[in-house]
Length: 137
Image (cartoon, rainbow, N blue to C red; front, side, top):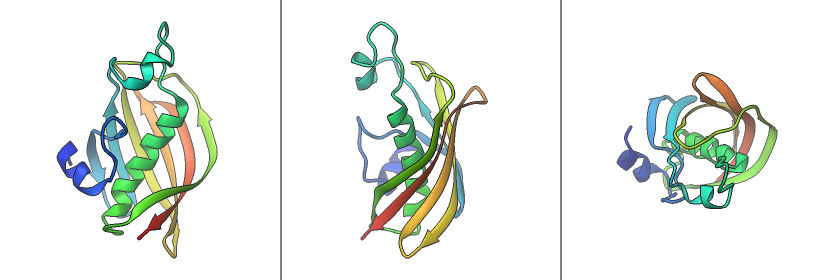
């Protein structure tokens, strides 16, 4: 799935769209990627001398990846964060890195979903988290 197909599903737009391509997808699992560019807006302040992707944006990228998977079912809904559990950051993400995100559906009940996500760079885990979201219609 390319960026135009992703934009047809997700309500997010640049500079706050963090999914470039979907590599694999089904109803309970998705793998996507994001190429981290040197000119990303957040690097200007985080940090100019040593650019590091903020952890909260890595979690956002995982949430958006899950959103692509979920919005195929919940067409027209808006995914809203409800909670983040067990977020762990293992390595730094820098300009030039390719973030590979794998998200799995853990639970779904009444429009409330729980997903687990793992983000990797060069096959090394940089972030993992469990995210809860509501699918607002």
